[in-house]
Structures are given as structure tokens and as C-alpha cells.
Image (cartoon, rainbow, N blue to C red; front, side, top):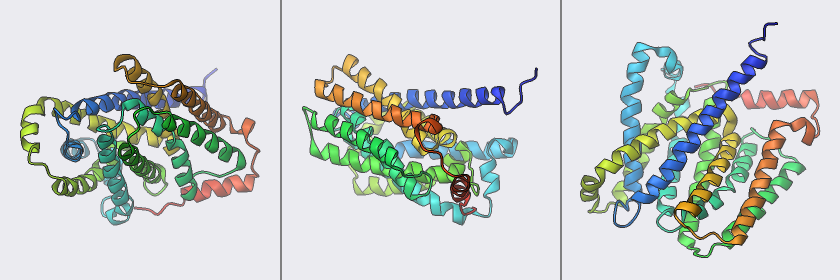
Length: 341
């Protein structure tokens, strides 16, 4: 018997594609985090704003030249660029805040490495699923109910225990990371509107192509304001490390857009939870970062809440009361009513 395209075979293709994107994101993100931590050491390249500007400049070069060639040779690989020609003003109403939040997130996350351990920062990121849900609910992408609020409180409790159990707590690092996470979550929610909204539906390469100039402009201003005379000399010394570091950042940006497009903003954050588990274990085993028993316990509490959240998303009919058909239709319609670009 033939398997319908939208049946088992189509489902298998979809899950394989999603799993590939998520795995690629986890590997690239984990590698870049440890690479950035290495570069941010005071004896190497301790310039977070300049480092993120280099990332975005490389992003602009690679996704600026490349897309023009792709569009000319095979436009089907970047349909978003062709679709939005002549209609960029409406699109940039979304891309400008995305670029600004992206710049703040990049700078803040790199700056925090100067004060806090990788493991502690991953503990803090467990709260992202809560932040994204709140922002998604405000944007009309998620529905609030008592069960979801209970799981949110569950995750907040675990994250708070992780932070309070830190032996080498540095408030400035905690505050910078908190601002970075707020920016990352707001960026992810707006990006979901651009990548999945019926009026835009940009492909990952087109999305990266449009966002890069905005983000670079914000980072360029920040680099000028925080300029350090030692930056040129450090670039000349560490360029063999900066170039591959920037290339990994470009690949990660495309992978992030792909994951958000395939799984939603909440799915992207949940994928990040798996990455956090790997990074915490890696940092504990290989870098011998101190993790208290209280933090391990809190980490398990947080992860159990996140996995329960994931289960609710995978099997909503078994964990949430069914909504009337008219309410479900209204929810779908409200999500798809996005201004066209």
C-alpha cells in the first residue's frame, strides 16, 4: 500500500528535518559558547562589543555577497528576497527591533563570560522558556491557562534555586546575562512572526540577509562608544582565531532561524535546554567548574518542568482540556493575521 505524502512518510521527513536543524544548532551553539569564553579571557580578546561586531560584519559579508549570487543563479533557494522586493518598509518594522534585540543579546551574552562561569549562565537560561511564553502570549502566539502557569512557576522555582546556589555569584554578570536573555526572548518571538507569519514566511537565509545590516549598525555604534585602543593590536594577534569564530557565528545564525521556523520560538528555547544540559556537564567534567549539589538538584527540578512543558506541547489532548472548535479556529486565524511585507 502506498504511503500518502502527508502521512507517515511526510511526518518522517518533517521530524528528520527538524531533528537535523536542532542538532546542528546545539553543536554550533555549544561550540561557539566555549570558543567565545576562550577568546574573552583578559589575555586574549576581551572586547565583547568588538567581537560581536566582527561576527555580524562577517555575517553581512557572507550573507550579502552569497544571497545576491544565489538569487541570480537559483532564486528558489531564497524566495524571501524576491517576495519582499519593493515592500521592505513594512518588513523592517519587524527587522529593526529584531536587529536591536539581537545586538543586545550578542553583546550581553559575550560580556557575561567575563564575570560568570559557563555552567552558571546555562542555569540562568533555563528561565528563557518562561520569558518566551510570556512574550508569545502577549503577541497572541500562545494561550495562557492554569496548567501552563503552574509549569511556569515550576521552572521559575528551579531557576531561582540554581542562581541562589552559586558559590561565586557576581551581580554585574547576573544582571548583564538577565538583560541579554530578555533581548534574546523578545528577538525570538518577533522572529517567529517574520519566519512563520502568513504575510512574510521568510526562509532562514533571507531572514539572516535582512537582519545582518540592522544588527551591524547597532553594534558599530556600540563599538565606537566602548572603543578600546588595544582592539586593533588584539585583532592583529588573534585573527587566526577570530575568523573561524566569526564563521561559526554566521552558521549559527542561519541554524537559529531554521529552528525557529520549524519549531516556533518556544520550541527553539526548549531545544536550547538540551544544549544547556550538554554544556553544564561538559563544563563540569572538562573545565572543572564548581557546581554545588543544590544547583544539580535545582537543575533537575527545572529540566523536569521544561520536559513536562514539552510533553504538553507534543500531546496537548492528554494534558490540556480541549478547546471548542470555534475557539481553535479563532486562535489559528489570530496567529495568521500578520501584516504583509
